[in-house]
Amino acid sequence: MNTKKSMLVWFRNNLRTEDNITLARAVEQDAPLIPLFIFDEKRDCGSASRLWLYHALKSFERELFRLGTRLIFLKGDSRIILARLASETGAKALYWDRSYEPYQKEQDQLIQKDLEGWGIRCESFNDTLLFDPAQIRTRQGTPFKVFTAFWNHCTSLPEPMLPVRAPQRLSGPAKWPQSKRLEDFGLRDKARWSNKVEAFWEPGNVDVRKNWRKFLKEKLENYSHDRDRPALEGTSRLSPYLHFGEISVRSIWHEMRQYMVQHRRAGIFREAETFLRQIVWREFAHYFLFHFPETIEHPFRKEFEKFHWKKNSALLCAWRKGKTGYPIVDAGMRELWATGWMHNRVRMIVASFLVKDLLQPWQEGAQWFLETLVDADVANNVFGWQWTAGCGADAAPYFRIFNPILQGEKFDSRGDYVRRWVPELSKLPDRFIHKPWQASPEILAKAGIRLGKDYPDPVVDHHQARNRALFNYARMKK
Ligand SMILES: Cc1cc2nc3c(=O)[nH]c(=O)nc-3n(C[C@H](O)[C@H](O)[C@H](O)COP(=O)(O)OP(=O)(O)OC[C@H]3O[C@@H](n4cnc5c(N)ncnc54)[C@H](O)[C@@H]3O)c2cc1C
Image (tube, rainbow, N blue to C red; front, side, top):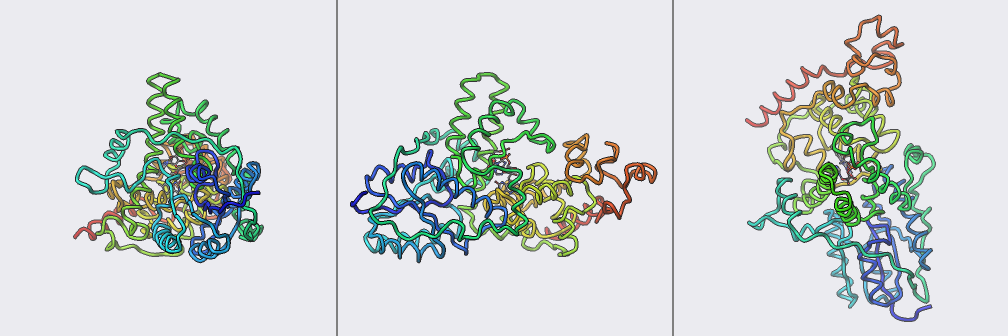
């Protein structure tokens, strides 16, 4: 039992003890620590994310318990709660992991002002990103807007800080503040659709390290090819763990660098660099939201505010349910609904289809992804949607409209991915799997499909839809 003045350690997006600078710096202060998590309903996340958060917190609580301490659970407005807690515990300091999201950034400033006003020391640390976005600028002092320039800059900087070890033991205060139970947050509501995603994932950072090593050993070698093939498990599937900070991005970076040194072969070097570029895309998306917070709702390229969307709830509903009649789109949307995750290539295809073929606002798609993805992440999501819609930074040009048939034929050439998620098409021959409407009545009958009944007719004609999208784009540019 420790009678010294305690410190509050507020965990948010970094639910781990390994390479947690916030925790490591707090331990150095030699004070009893009160680890805490606040569930703020104003910052509530989507259903799949909530479920993930439940498991991440459970696992983190167990980890802290092993180190001899507890995790205090609180619910409500962080500013009010921290003020109350500081006064109740007489804490001398508050440490937290910095968040770069617009709402949290603003709130953090207010919290710091309140607590420092009462003589409580406040410090925050970057545990989420490789580099602090506030420190990175072009030579002209402006934020980077082009990925390649950002990548070149980041890779010319001194390496990110080396990971720090988890503490051996943590000491708590003589008297603990009151805590809610994790179950009181209602994150794992039994009735929710999202519970079924548990069958596909094992949240909790014990598993993630195992998966990560398996990826390095077995998948990295073919990463640049396999990462575009949705039927293969060719990517790391780290995204939800990175989002909740169950694994540290600095560890990923350094372990990959080490791997490159140990396996000095041009092939591995290339693959590893392709992977690290994805990690830096994540960095860029967070950096971008930090410097351009308005892009959370508004297009980065202002002219897109005038774009003529054709809002249509029936089309939006068909897209959400995976009933558009375009097999690769439907497979992606059904994978999302079943597992809370979707392959990156397919995210681009379904996003392009929604905003360009169906002319629905990108914000609608982003909202659905936030609700259904286990890795739902405001920065990556908004960036991905604006990139696909052509209105973001360094975005795909608007006129590059993905053709869902050609994309399917190129990246799922044998239709394995479609057959898995759209089983009603499973008996179709490969050559029609991405365009069932071109199959003859005999072939359809043999495959047991009645188009329009067992599987929908296409909700739009892609070629006409493409022309309509380009027309709307030209109209916006006038
Ligand atoms: C429309 C759209 C929406 C998206 N929404 C999200 C989201 O909400 N949350 C999310 O984490 N990612 C999002 N992404 C990015 C990407 O699809 C996922 O990060 C990736 O599919 C995760 O799979 P993985 O971990 O196996 O990736 P890997 O290929 O193994 O990559 C490793 C890590 O790099 C990062 N990464 C990879 N690709 C990207 C990218 N294009 N942009 C930013 N970071 C990337 C992720 O953290 C990922 O875990 C979105 C992409 C698009 C096109």
